[in-house]
Length: 170
Image (cartoon, rainbow, N blue to C red):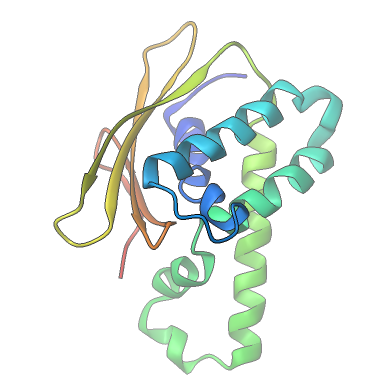
């Protein structure tokens, strides 16, 4: 798998919340949430060939739905016009965004070449929530830094070391 900043960011985006959703009511630190997802993501990467696209999609879908606050993200992406949509239109947009997000991960994380993820720091965010700094460490390239904002155990914003924001937090 060729590791690019975009590929690393897409994997890291998924990392910000799985454990909170899958660990029932047990509270977890933001770092623990990220680390738990990274473990799932790496396992999918290691089995990518045998799983195929559909298998990766099925394995990643519950993790992504648990990690991301997809309803908030699509609402923010649409902006103020969201409120003028009917509930049915909002539901269709959310479902399309969900399929797109999961499909992107299943497509991009299609192999394993010895890379690993590291959580490097966790700190309170001045705007609320918790900042988690991580990096993807490939075997043949420089590490890629990925930073996340979690609120209530779910991803609401992410950016790479270059400051490219992928989602905005409300």
